[in-house]
Length: 427
Image (cartoon, rainbow, N blue to C red; front, side, top):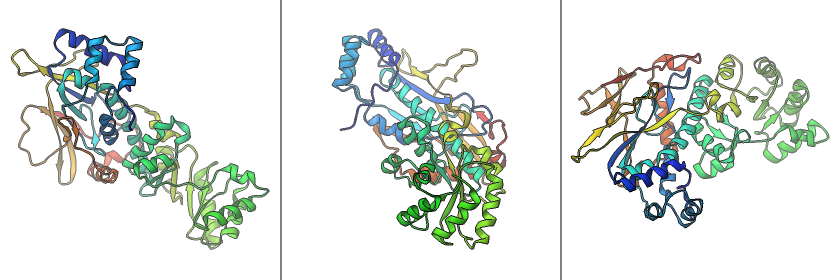
């Protein structure tokens, strides 16, 4: 049986429901939107990730007896609210940018329509999933761009919470990483997994030769041998002697990676191992990867900087009420006016203007969408009448991301700090 996700939320979501039930406003039709007022500093585009995870969590967003007992014991809400929560089911509709899309300031990544009470309860859950996954995906996308077609391996499990590690592997795969070291991500999401050995395996043996011999005997000559435990030049020579010229790859995890890669490539070629690949690790980020563009590197393993969003561990997304039912039954636009934290009232539509294969603007508006053949609709149905309808294979999101990044202006590939590569045009 799945575990309830209903308590993965903040207390004030439930206390708002209690007060709204008491005032008679809890059942007013409402529209909430998730958006970012700005991109994280220096980023030129954001990446949508976590859609599938949110839909899975929404299926289990039920206040079971254990959750209700905790709320009662802790005195979080009163008895009438507990009774209401016992029957809670989200019955509304959700639209959103599909997973793998890119986004810009004020893009409505998620539009949630239902009663106030049932929609406000999803705020924290939606934000926690998207703020984490979008941050990792944005960092991963920049790393993939910097890698220029060379494969990137996600290997950050030891640098974050165990569940965050699984989510990070998923987000990185959406953004173009080829594999992960995390086995649970492989089981849960079908992501290819990879891994061979650490320095401890070499240190375990009486000699580096013994360690290489044991690894090749077990995993075959196509394995990747870690060659920087002692002396790199000696290790590369030993690796080829043990595995033969068909050795799959060597890994460098320290030192001046660019200079070492040049030296190792020359040595491998001189030993006849011309097909042996060079994989580099060691606290890489997109800038370090870009700096290695001219080096004879065949792949990158990325950990800490990936799972922490490469300097931006959260995305800054917010979830705001933009419309609610008025006294006459019609919908009334509402907006927050706080300085620096304003929102724009009214339910939005969103489209991307694409001309001659290149995206030129993010267009967001209220009311009727213009009949413009250059605008590609961005919002798709995710939930209808409480039932998720937007599920898709992770490979579809991955393919989508590759397509939408390819249609962005060339400035999107720059690693330097800059503004959003597309303007957000209000219509």
